[in-house]
Amino acid sequence: MNSQSDEFRNILISLPKTEIHVHLEAMARAESIWTLWQKNKISMDGVRNLDDLRRRFQIKTLDEFIGVFINIVQNSFRTESDFSYLINDAGEYLKNNNIVYAEVFFAPTKFIKMGFSFPKIIETLSGGAQSIRQKYGIEIKYLIDVSRTFGMENAMSNLNLTLEHRSPDVIGIGLGGAEASGPARDYAEVYQKARDSGLHVAAHSGEDMGPEAVWETINCLKPERIGHGISAVQDKKLMEYLAEKQIPLEVCPTSNLFTRKYVSEISKHPVKTFYDNKLFVTINSDDPTLFSTSLIDEYMLLYDNGIFTQEEILSLMINNINAAFLPQNKKAELRSYYENSGN
Ligand SMILES: [Zn+2]
Image (cartoon, rainbow, N blue to C red; front, side, top):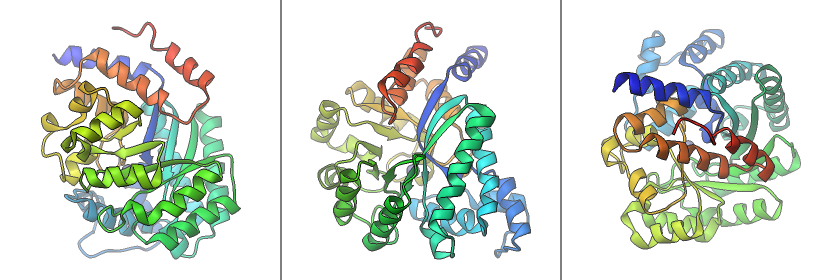
Protein backbone atom coordinates (compact mmCIF):
# COMPACT_ATOMS: atom_id res chain seq x y z
CA MET A 1 0.00 0.00 0.00
CA ASN A 2 2.70 2.43 1.03
CA SER A 3 5.02 1.68 -1.83
CA GLN A 4 2.04 1.75 -4.21
CA SER A 5 1.13 5.09 -2.75
CA ASP A 6 4.70 6.40 -3.14
CA GLU A 7 4.82 5.13 -6.68
CA PHE A 8 1.60 6.91 -7.55
CA ARG A 9 2.82 10.12 -5.92
CA ASN A 10 5.86 9.96 -8.21
CA ILE A 11 3.60 9.57 -11.24
CA LEU A 12 1.58 12.57 -10.09
CA ILE A 13 4.71 14.66 -9.64
CA SER A 14 6.00 13.70 -13.08
CA LEU A 15 2.87 14.91 -14.89
CA PRO A 16 2.45 18.59 -15.81
CA LYS A 17 -0.65 19.87 -14.06
CA THR A 18 -2.97 22.84 -13.95
CA GLU A 19 -4.50 24.32 -10.82
CA ILE A 20 -7.51 26.56 -11.29
CA HIS A 21 -8.73 27.37 -7.77
CA VAL A 22 -5.93 28.67 -5.58
CA HIS A 23 -5.58 31.99 -3.75
CA LEU A 24 -2.26 33.78 -4.18
CA GLU A 25 -2.09 35.13 -0.63
CA ALA A 26 -2.60 31.60 0.72
CA MET A 27 0.47 30.34 -1.11
CA ALA A 28 2.68 32.43 1.21
CA ARG A 29 4.54 30.18 3.63
CA ALA A 30 3.96 30.74 7.34
CA GLU A 31 7.70 31.52 7.63
CA SER A 32 7.31 34.37 5.14
CA ILE A 33 4.30 35.75 6.97
CA TRP A 34 6.24 35.61 10.23
CA THR A 35 9.24 37.35 8.60
CA LEU A 36 6.93 40.09 7.34
CA TRP A 37 5.47 40.50 10.84
CA GLN A 38 8.99 41.07 12.19
CA LYS A 39 9.89 43.42 9.35
CA ASN A 40 6.65 45.40 9.55
CA LYS A 41 6.45 45.28 13.37
CA ILE A 42 3.06 43.57 13.35
CA SER A 43 1.89 41.93 16.56
CA MET A 44 -1.22 40.18 17.75
CA ASP A 45 -2.29 38.97 21.18
CA GLY A 46 -1.28 35.36 21.75
CA VAL A 47 1.03 35.16 18.72
CA ARG A 48 4.60 35.14 20.05
CA ASN A 49 6.29 32.90 17.51
CA LEU A 50 5.90 30.94 14.29
CA ASP A 51 4.17 28.02 16.03
CA ASP A 52 1.57 30.36 17.54
CA LEU A 53 1.01 31.80 14.07
CA ARG A 54 0.52 28.35 12.56
CA ARG A 55 -1.99 27.51 15.28
CA ARG A 56 -4.09 30.47 14.13
CA PHE A 57 -4.49 28.70 10.77
CA GLN A 58 -6.45 25.87 12.42
CA ILE A 59 -9.82 27.37 11.54
CA LYS A 60 -13.15 25.58 11.85
CA THR A 61 -15.61 27.70 9.86
CA LEU A 62 -15.57 29.76 6.68
CA ASP A 63 -16.13 32.98 8.63
CA GLU A 64 -13.20 32.20 10.90
CA PHE A 65 -11.13 31.45 7.82
CA ILE A 66 -12.01 34.79 6.20
CA GLY A 67 -10.93 36.57 9.40
CA VAL A 68 -7.53 34.84 9.34
CA PHE A 69 -7.12 35.40 5.61
CA ILE A 70 -7.77 39.15 5.81
CA ASN A 71 -6.47 40.09 9.26
CA ILE A 72 -3.47 37.78 9.54
CA VAL A 73 -2.32 36.87 6.03
CA GLN A 74 -3.21 39.91 3.92
CA ASN A 75 -2.44 42.25 6.82
CA SER A 76 1.23 41.14 6.72
CA PHE A 77 1.91 42.95 3.44
CA ARG A 78 2.54 46.66 3.88
CA THR A 79 4.30 47.66 0.65
CA GLU A 80 4.25 46.34 -2.90
CA SER A 81 7.80 45.06 -2.38
CA ASP A 82 6.47 42.77 0.39
CA PHE A 83 4.68 40.88 -2.39
CA SER A 84 8.07 39.50 -3.46
CA TYR A 85 7.69 36.95 -0.61
CA LEU A 86 4.37 35.92 -2.05
CA ILE A 87 5.73 35.57 -5.57
CA ASN A 88 8.73 33.52 -4.40
CA ASP A 89 6.56 31.19 -2.34
CA ALA A 90 3.99 30.83 -5.15
CA GLY A 91 6.76 29.96 -7.62
CA GLU A 92 8.17 27.33 -5.24
CA TYR A 93 4.74 25.87 -4.55
CA LEU A 94 3.90 25.58 -8.26
CA LYS A 95 7.30 24.12 -9.10
CA ASN A 96 7.16 21.54 -6.28
CA ASN A 97 3.78 20.33 -7.54
CA ASN A 98 4.83 20.43 -11.20
CA ILE A 99 1.94 22.77 -11.90
CA VAL A 100 2.77 24.31 -15.27
CA TYR A 101 -0.26 26.57 -15.51
CA ALA A 102 -2.25 28.15 -12.69
CA GLU A 103 -5.22 30.48 -12.48
CA VAL A 104 -4.74 32.31 -9.24
CA PHE A 105 -7.22 34.42 -7.28
CA PHE A 106 -6.03 37.70 -5.84
CA ALA A 107 -8.32 39.74 -3.56
CA PRO A 108 -7.41 43.45 -3.68
CA THR A 109 -9.98 44.93 -1.26
CA LYS A 110 -7.97 44.74 1.96
CA PHE A 111 -4.89 46.16 0.22
CA ILE A 112 -6.82 49.07 -1.28
CA LYS A 113 -8.27 49.81 2.17
CA MET A 114 -4.69 49.80 3.53
CA GLY A 115 -3.71 52.45 0.96
CA PHE A 116 -2.10 50.36 -1.78
CA SER A 117 -2.50 51.70 -5.32
CA PHE A 118 -4.38 49.28 -7.59
CA PRO A 119 -2.26 49.93 -10.71
CA LYS A 120 0.88 49.35 -8.65
CA ILE A 121 -0.54 46.08 -7.33
CA ILE A 122 -1.28 44.91 -10.87
CA GLU A 123 2.18 45.98 -12.02
CA THR A 124 3.73 43.99 -9.16
CA LEU A 125 1.59 40.92 -9.85
CA SER A 126 2.47 41.08 -13.55
CA GLY A 127 6.15 41.36 -12.69
CA GLY A 128 5.71 38.34 -10.42
CA ALA A 129 4.06 36.30 -13.18
CA GLN A 130 6.93 37.24 -15.48
CA SER A 131 9.61 36.25 -12.98
CA ILE A 132 7.89 32.88 -12.32
CA ARG A 133 7.71 32.31 -16.07
CA GLN A 134 11.41 33.15 -16.49
CA LYS A 135 12.62 31.17 -13.50
CA TYR A 136 10.50 28.02 -13.86
CA GLY A 137 8.73 28.18 -17.23
CA ILE A 138 5.42 28.19 -15.31
CA GLU A 139 2.53 30.31 -16.56
CA ILE A 140 0.22 32.03 -14.12
CA LYS A 141 -2.86 34.12 -14.81
CA TYR A 142 -4.81 36.09 -12.24
CA LEU A 143 -8.50 36.21 -11.44
CA ILE A 144 -9.38 39.27 -9.39
CA ASP A 145 -11.56 38.21 -6.46
CA VAL A 146 -13.99 41.15 -6.40
CA SER A 147 -15.23 39.78 -3.02
CA ARG A 148 -18.68 39.39 -1.53
CA THR A 149 -17.46 40.27 1.99
CA PHE A 150 -17.54 44.04 1.47
CA GLY A 151 -20.74 44.50 -0.54
CA MET A 152 -21.71 45.10 -4.13
CA GLU A 153 -20.34 48.65 -4.51
CA ASN A 154 -16.91 47.52 -3.42
CA ALA A 155 -17.08 44.58 -5.85
CA MET A 156 -18.10 46.91 -8.69
CA SER A 157 -15.26 49.23 -7.79
CA ASN A 158 -12.80 46.30 -7.92
CA LEU A 159 -14.16 45.33 -11.33
CA ASN A 160 -13.90 48.91 -12.61
CA LEU A 161 -10.28 49.14 -11.43
CA THR A 162 -9.55 45.83 -13.16
CA LEU A 163 -11.02 47.19 -16.40
CA GLU A 164 -9.27 50.56 -16.12
CA HIS A 165 -5.89 48.90 -15.58
CA ARG A 166 -6.33 46.03 -17.97
CA SER A 167 -3.41 43.58 -18.00
CA PRO A 168 -2.90 40.48 -20.13
CA ASP A 169 -1.98 38.69 -16.88
CA VAL A 170 -5.46 39.31 -15.43
CA ILE A 171 -7.99 37.22 -17.33
CA GLY A 172 -11.09 37.29 -15.18
CA ILE A 173 -12.85 37.73 -11.88
CA GLY A 174 -13.95 35.53 -9.01
CA LEU A 175 -16.30 35.96 -6.08
CA GLY A 176 -14.90 34.69 -2.80
CA GLY A 177 -15.59 35.68 0.78
CA ALA A 178 -18.57 35.42 3.06
CA GLU A 179 -21.16 33.47 1.08
CA ALA A 180 -23.88 33.70 3.73
CA SER A 181 -23.87 37.51 3.85
CA GLY A 182 -23.16 38.09 0.16
CA PRO A 183 -25.82 36.33 -1.93
CA ALA A 184 -25.05 35.93 -5.64
CA ARG A 185 -28.03 38.04 -6.77
CA ASP A 186 -26.36 41.17 -5.33
CA TYR A 187 -23.48 40.74 -7.79
CA ALA A 188 -25.45 40.14 -10.99
CA GLU A 189 -24.60 43.57 -12.41
CA VAL A 190 -20.90 43.17 -11.63
CA TYR A 191 -20.83 39.83 -13.44
CA GLN A 192 -22.83 41.10 -16.39
CA LYS A 193 -20.35 43.93 -16.84
CA ALA A 194 -17.36 41.60 -16.50
CA ARG A 195 -18.76 39.19 -19.09
CA ASP A 196 -19.60 42.07 -21.45
CA SER A 197 -16.01 43.29 -21.07
CA GLY A 198 -14.59 39.94 -22.16
CA LEU A 199 -13.34 38.80 -18.77
CA HIS A 200 -13.70 35.21 -17.66
CA VAL A 201 -16.04 34.73 -14.72
CA ALA A 202 -15.88 32.15 -11.94
CA ALA A 203 -17.69 32.26 -8.59
CA HIS A 204 -17.45 30.47 -5.26
CA SER A 205 -20.82 28.95 -4.40
CA GLY A 206 -22.27 26.08 -2.39
CA GLU A 207 -19.27 26.16 -0.05
CA ASP A 208 -21.13 27.58 2.93
CA MET A 209 -24.72 27.77 1.62
CA GLY A 210 -27.19 25.22 0.29
CA PRO A 211 -28.07 24.18 -3.27
CA GLU A 212 -30.45 27.12 -3.67
CA ALA A 213 -27.38 29.40 -3.48
CA VAL A 214 -25.76 27.42 -6.31
CA TRP A 215 -28.91 27.79 -8.43
CA GLU A 216 -28.89 31.51 -7.72
CA THR A 217 -25.22 31.75 -8.69
CA ILE A 218 -25.88 29.94 -11.97
CA ASN A 219 -28.93 32.06 -12.79
CA CYS A 220 -27.67 35.47 -11.66
CA LEU A 221 -23.94 35.31 -12.42
CA LYS A 222 -23.71 32.78 -15.27
CA PRO A 223 -20.23 31.70 -14.19
CA GLU A 224 -18.04 29.60 -16.45
CA ARG A 225 -16.96 27.60 -13.39
CA ILE A 226 -18.20 27.17 -9.83
CA GLY A 227 -15.84 27.22 -6.87
CA HIS A 228 -16.68 24.28 -4.55
CA GLY A 229 -20.40 23.68 -5.30
CA ILE A 230 -20.37 21.04 -2.59
CA SER A 231 -23.95 21.51 -1.39
CA ALA A 232 -25.20 20.56 -4.88
CA VAL A 233 -25.11 16.98 -3.61
CA GLN A 234 -28.35 17.74 -1.71
CA ASP A 235 -30.28 18.52 -4.90
CA LYS A 236 -30.62 15.83 -7.56
CA LYS A 237 -32.02 18.25 -10.14
CA LEU A 238 -29.06 20.57 -9.64
CA MET A 239 -26.61 17.70 -10.06
CA GLU A 240 -28.41 16.71 -13.26
CA TYR A 241 -28.22 20.29 -14.50
CA LEU A 242 -24.51 20.61 -13.69
CA ALA A 243 -23.84 17.30 -15.44
CA GLU A 244 -25.88 18.26 -18.49
CA LYS A 245 -24.30 21.71 -18.85
CA GLN A 246 -20.85 20.43 -17.88
CA ILE A 247 -20.16 23.49 -15.71
CA PRO A 248 -16.84 22.68 -14.05
CA LEU A 249 -16.77 22.46 -10.26
CA GLU A 250 -13.53 23.54 -8.62
CA VAL A 251 -13.57 21.02 -5.78
CA CYS A 252 -11.13 21.62 -2.89
CA PRO A 253 -11.43 18.62 -0.53
CA THR A 254 -9.15 19.67 2.34
CA SER A 255 -10.62 23.16 2.40
CA ASN A 256 -14.10 21.67 2.86
CA LEU A 257 -12.81 19.53 5.73
CA PHE A 258 -11.53 22.67 7.46
CA THR A 259 -14.64 24.79 7.01
CA ARG A 260 -16.75 21.74 7.96
CA LYS A 261 -20.08 23.05 6.70
CA TYR A 262 -20.94 20.10 4.48
CA VAL A 263 -18.10 17.62 4.95
CA SER A 264 -17.11 16.08 8.26
CA GLU A 265 -14.71 13.44 6.95
CA ILE A 266 -13.08 12.73 3.63
CA SER A 267 -14.95 9.43 3.10
CA LYS A 268 -18.19 11.46 3.09
CA HIS A 269 -17.01 14.11 0.63
CA PRO A 270 -19.51 14.47 -2.25
CA VAL A 271 -16.73 14.53 -4.85
CA LYS A 272 -17.25 10.82 -5.66
CA THR A 273 -21.02 11.26 -6.02
CA PHE A 274 -20.36 14.16 -8.39
CA TYR A 275 -17.93 12.06 -10.38
CA ASP A 276 -20.28 9.06 -10.56
CA ASN A 277 -23.10 11.35 -11.72
CA LYS A 278 -20.91 12.68 -14.55
CA LEU A 279 -20.44 16.20 -13.19
CA PHE A 280 -17.36 18.04 -14.44
CA VAL A 281 -15.08 17.69 -11.40
CA THR A 282 -11.71 19.37 -10.99
CA ILE A 283 -9.47 19.11 -7.92
CA ASN A 284 -7.69 22.05 -6.31
CA SER A 285 -5.96 23.08 -3.10
CA ASP A 286 -7.68 26.47 -2.47
CA ASP A 287 -5.34 27.73 0.27
CA PRO A 288 -2.28 25.48 0.48
CA THR A 289 -0.46 27.31 3.29
CA LEU A 290 -3.40 27.75 5.58
CA PHE A 291 -4.58 24.17 5.15
CA SER A 292 -1.05 22.64 4.98
CA THR A 293 -1.91 20.99 1.70
CA SER A 294 -0.88 21.04 -1.97
CA LEU A 295 -2.42 19.94 -5.23
CA ILE A 296 -0.52 16.64 -5.07
CA ASP A 297 -1.62 16.14 -1.46
CA GLU A 298 -5.24 16.63 -2.53
CA TYR A 299 -4.98 13.90 -5.17
CA MET A 300 -3.18 11.61 -2.72
CA LEU A 301 -5.85 12.20 -0.06
CA LEU A 302 -8.48 10.97 -2.54
CA TYR A 303 -6.33 8.04 -3.61
CA ASP A 304 -5.10 6.88 -0.18
CA ASN A 305 -8.65 6.94 1.18
CA GLY A 306 -9.87 4.74 -1.62
CA ILE A 307 -12.21 7.38 -3.06
CA PHE A 308 -10.70 7.28 -6.55
CA THR A 309 -8.53 4.83 -8.45
CA GLN A 310 -5.32 5.94 -10.15
CA GLU A 311 -7.10 5.96 -13.48
CA GLU A 312 -9.91 8.13 -12.14
CA ILE A 313 -7.44 10.58 -10.65
CA LEU A 314 -5.64 10.89 -13.97
CA SER A 315 -9.00 11.64 -15.59
CA LEU A 316 -9.62 14.33 -12.95
CA MET A 317 -6.25 15.87 -13.77
CA ILE A 318 -7.26 16.01 -17.42
CA ASN A 319 -10.49 17.72 -16.29
CA ASN A 320 -8.35 20.40 -14.63
CA ILE A 321 -6.67 20.98 -18.00
CA ASN A 322 -9.96 21.04 -19.89
CA ALA A 323 -11.59 23.47 -17.43
CA ALA A 324 -8.72 25.97 -17.60
CA PHE A 325 -9.11 29.23 -19.50
CA LEU A 326 -6.48 28.09 -21.97
CA PRO A 327 -6.54 27.90 -25.78
CA GLN A 328 -7.47 24.48 -27.20
CA ASN A 329 -4.01 23.81 -28.67
CA LYS A 330 -2.37 24.37 -25.28
CA LYS A 331 -4.87 22.01 -23.62
CA ALA A 332 -4.16 19.36 -26.26
CA GLU A 333 -0.44 19.74 -25.67
CA LEU A 334 -0.87 19.23 -21.91
CA ARG A 335 -3.22 16.27 -22.39
CA SER A 336 -0.64 14.55 -24.58
CA TYR A 337 1.53 13.95 -21.50
CA TYR A 338 -1.25 11.78 -20.06
CA GLU A 339 -1.49 9.41 -23.01
CA ASN A 340 1.09 6.95 -21.67
CA SER A 341 0.90 7.73 -18.00
CA GLY A 342 1.03 4.53 -16.02
CA ASN A 343 -2.55 3.31 -16.23
ZN1 LIG B 1 -11.42 29.62 -2.69
